[in-house]
Image 1 (cartoon, helix red, strand yellow):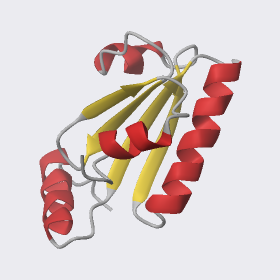
Image 2 (cartoon, one colour):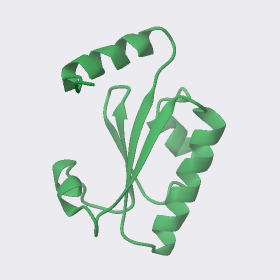
Image 3 (cartoon, helix red, strand yellow):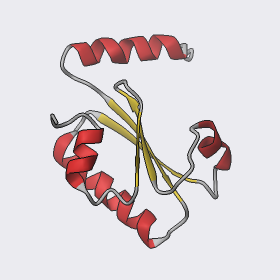
Image 4 (tube, helix red, strand yellow):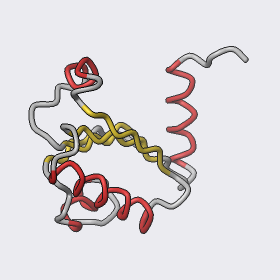
Length: 111
């Protein structure tokens, strides 16, 4: 099966979001198995389970394993959650223990 061009995939996801079925594409950057990294992973998994069931893609990236990805996403602090889709792109820094702040950053609650 031929790989779809990235623009076509993004257009599809935007159209899906307009139908009220937004698919969240998230990247969580961590630094090994530190306490903050482990806590951030647990927190985002719980938030996704509670609020985005069946409509999210979560990629956990250890900067020790893939430092080039952190550079590409301009990561300056860890842990950092990057919301790639739906737009706008957002970055949330920390262990994600402030659930309300994370939900606000993901546009899952109104201000």
